[in-house]
Length: 126
Figure 1 (cartoon, rainbow, N blue to C red):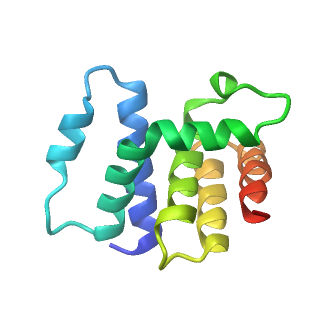
Figure 2 (figure 1 turned 60 degrees about the horizontal axis):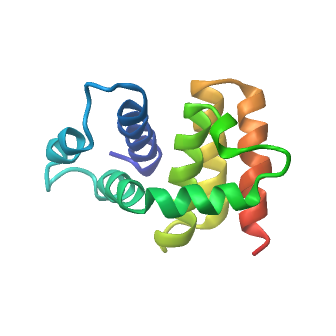
């Protein structure tokens, strides 16, 4: 699985946890086999483990928005991208941002991509 697809699969799994009350975090983690793509597994496990911290980091960058107003697609994309920026050394930050924008546009719309870009650009200036 290439890295782009791994990010998208991680997004799908994490999105399911947020929207589907019948899917538990434990079910998602159990479904990850050791031989599956390392990036996908790292993103899913990392975002689950660091979720509260990621949400706080994202909240700190919001202007005129509260975290609770952000849609589930955007929250999930932002969590993955912020995790990847700070915890996945082999991924250049610009790649993490560009991939996040593409996922947001694919699963929502162009405006979502612009919103994601605006928030993530604040992480790039740190």
